[in-house]
Amino acid sequence: MPDERMLTCMYAIVDYSAKRLNMKPLYPVTYKDIAAIVETTCKERLIFDRQAVIEYGAALDVLNETFTLLPCRFGTFLQDEKAVLQVLREHYVFYKKKLEELRDKQEFGLKILSEKSIQVHSENNKKQSKDGKEYLLQKFYEYREDEEQKQVNQKVVDVIHEELQKLSSMSVKNAEISGHVVFSGNYLVGKKAESFFCSKVEALQRMYPELKFLLTGPWPPYNFVAEKS
Image (cartoon, rainbow, N blue to C red; front, side, top):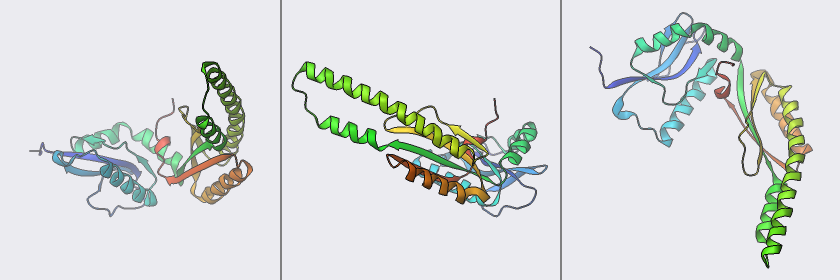
């Protein structure tokens, strides 16, 4: 009789045809030539805090060094191994196709901040308005400056994104940006091209010193596992 206090946590789907796992307490549930890397845990241990997220991410980083993988969302729990096996059966064709698509590739994330925008806002915040009319004029000029700067930034980041797309297999441009962030995107890059990709980002940073580039990675391909619509 199954222990109702236990659940199976899924970490990733991996190509399991060549290499084997030695990473206890994680273990594989296999189906044909793929596997779900899982851990069996009791419900009482399911604490969704920052430390748990860090440990989950660290495990995926280690798996990423050995396998081509499809990382699962943090907190993906199934009732037991039988349920995991059912998922592998039902989605086998998609998993195989996606694993082949991601083979020998990793993800990089890039955020670009406008240093000029930060400086302008900082200077404007120091200004003191003497009356209502001056305050409204100041706000109008700030708004116009912001809009003009946004247009300039957009043209620049479009060029940057286009250059980095040439070096990546796939890319995701995030629509939701806020504050001084003028661009946020993710790139799927072949492992053999990682150094060249990073060098290209450094070269673009030198070309556009008014912007600040924040490059992260390589990561497991978190943003490239979903099925294309």
